[in-house]
Image 1 (spheres, rainbow, N blue to C red):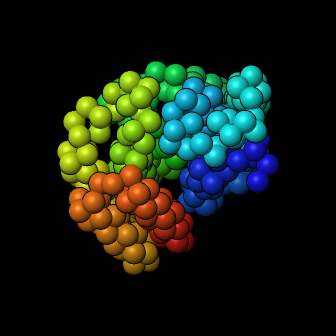
Image 2: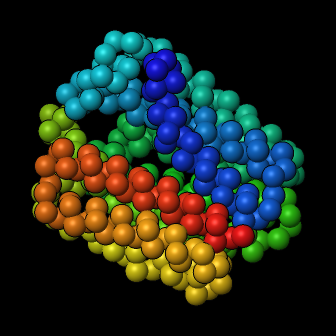
Image 3: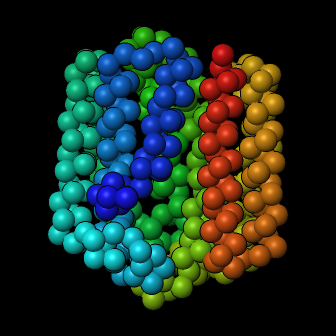
Amino acid sequence: MNPYLEIIRPGNAIMAVIAIVLIGIIGENYNLPIISGAIAVFLATGGGNVINDYFDYKIDAINKPNRPIPSGRISLKNAYNYASLLFGVAVILGILSGYLLDNFIPTLIIALSSLLMVYYAKSLKKIALIGNIAISFLTGLCFIFAGIVIGLDNSSFEIVKISLYLGFFAGLMTMAREITKDMEDIEGDKLEKAKTFPIAYGNTKSSLLTSFFIGLASVLSPILYLNKIFNVYFLVIISVAIAIFLYGAYKILKDQSPENCKKVSKLIKIGMLIAFISFAIGSL
C-alpha cells in the first residue's frame, strides 16, 4: 500500500464516514452539506492519524516498526506537512458546509476537532483515561456532527437527538477499544514515559474497565429499540454485535497479553461495524 494512504489508516477514516452516512440514511438526507461534511470528517480523521504517528514515531519504532514513519517510507517533515494539508482541506470543506447551511457550527466542530486531535497526539494520549476519553468523544462526535448538519438543513432537530444516542454508544465501545489498545502497546508506552491506564493501574484493572464499558454498552443498547428509534430488526442484528463484544470481554479478562489484546481490539472493531449495520437496518 502507498505509505501516504497507509498512514491515514483508511479503515479508521472510513469508519468515521460510515457514522456520517448512517445518520444520513436515518435522516434521509444526502444533500451537499452532508456530503462535504463527510469528506471533511474523512480528511480530518486521516490528519489525526498522521499527526498521531508523527508524535509517536519513537513508540512505533518499538510497537509497530513497519508503520510508514519508523520504517523510513515517510520522513517526519513530510508527515507533519501532510497532516497540516489534510486538516486544512478538512476545515475548508467545513467552511463550505457552514456556508451552505448559513450556520457555521459545522465549521467550528471540524476546526476544534482538528485541534483536539493534535493536542491528543502531542499530550493527552499519555494521560491515563484522558486520552481515551478524547478519542471516544471524537468518535461519538462524528454521529452528532452529522445530526447537527442534517438538523440545520432540514430545520428539524429530531435527528440530533438520535445522533446523541448513537454517539453515546459509539463512545462507550471506543473507550473499551482504546484501553485495549493501550494494553497492547504498554511496552513502547513505558519507554516514552506515558501514563496510560494500563501503565498506571495494571492490566488486570484495565481488563476489568474494558469489560465494564463493553457490558454497559451491551446492556443499554435495547434502549434504542424501546425508545422507538429503531425497529425490531435492529435487535436481531445488534445481538450479533453484543455476542462479539461479550466474547471480547471474556477473552480480555482471561488473557491480557499484547497478542491477545490485539485480537480483542479487532473483535471490538468488527462488533462496532456490525452495530453500525444494525443502526442502518433498524432505521428502515
